[in-house]
Image 1 (cartoon, rainbow, N blue to C red):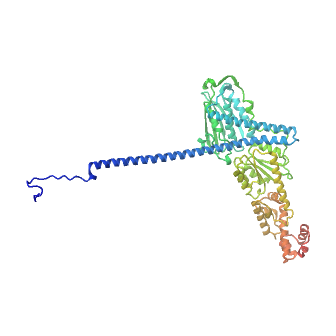
Image 2: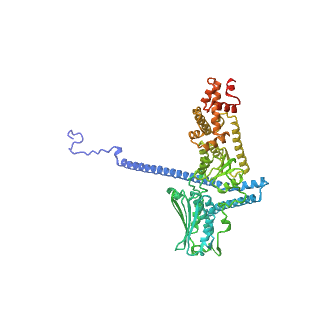
Image 3: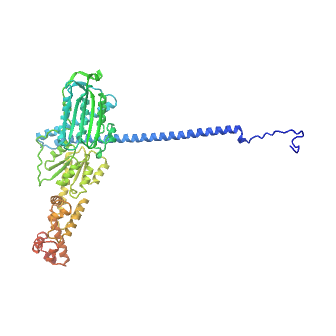
Length: 589
């Protein structure tokens, strides 16, 4: 205050400068509140987004799980329909025959009745298994434990599979070690169902000439151990944990051949209900072992499940007559002795009973048999049947793949193929036709309808051969409707024309160029044209001779040389025999 502006007494003055509003304590307090609210808002925003994302992920997983379950259920119903359609076919077809044909003798009638009876029981077993599975799901299945001879009971179940295994060239061995053969306690339905499912799978997926082993032994703690061991396709490590899930069906083969998808789930539930455990170890292509441990001591079961006044001495009679079993054919089955003059059919069907029924029905033909597509393909290449009837759902190679393979190979491409299937959806029919099927018949089918289809296809082949009756006016490649057969004839024509002047050119050389044996080439030409390969080579020589004579540039002797005839005289006689006039007269005309 040197200028005495503020005061005159020389005293100092205190000036207090208030901070701007944005720096006051209230401002800072509001800042803290704002930042807190912002942090809280961000926190809730992030949490909400995380929760939304989690909910969306859970919803997605639920949808996927639901879709997966729907697919499993759809596959289950598809497969169970297949399981029903085959026995239904083996009931309806014999019944149709009994109704429509009055000349069925006593032996045939007995066989047809037996076939129907077995398959009625097979259907009842399937239905009972479904009902029991439903009871287990609803915890309404009650144990019925009785005292019996477990060794004999298992032995009879194993014996029921002997014939089925023999058909597949599989040996079943049964080993047992029980301390007391007469004092085991068990529920016979549980043992029967579990071993039936395990043995069915073991035989179904075992290769020919292999061994399936069933072992039974008693442990010190009153536990019985049952093992079923096979050396088939096995189960992949990543699928071991899934095979006991309901509706699960491992697609090792096309079209869900592996059955309904409840067999192992049903077996596991039964074993648990019995107080036991079931386990599996598998090395694909080497060995698969199913191990079942079950209590067989009376004290292990609740009193209400025990029936102390009934003793099991053997498997019940109705249990021993398995639907999977095939009885010896009666006197009606005629032996199909190979005969070159008989029309041949190839039956491709993994169900032995249906295959046997069809073989017995088509006794007028020479019948060849195959268990699956791979086996049938080898037979078709070697024997070249006149017609093939094939199931669609089979192991190793399914019917669609088999049909596609047949139609894409020179040797058997001309053979008509009839597909039998339980798949009735239009897309499956389209798939079959697109892959070369000549007919597509749904199961259960009418056997008379199948026979008419077979006769019509054979008749069409006969009419096709008639179109080649004038072999000098018709080009085979222009007549056949199968693309592979067109290519075959075009290639054959090209090879013959390239060797037209070679008078030593033979059928063997033509077959070698086409990668076919002489017998295969002969059957191929006879099936399609009614003529032999020698006839075809001669007809191509004469067609070329006619063309050269029409052009008029060469004389008869020169034409003879150009078309590969051994001599002019042979050329003249051959030309006159098949054309109806001499080369010279033809040239003048």
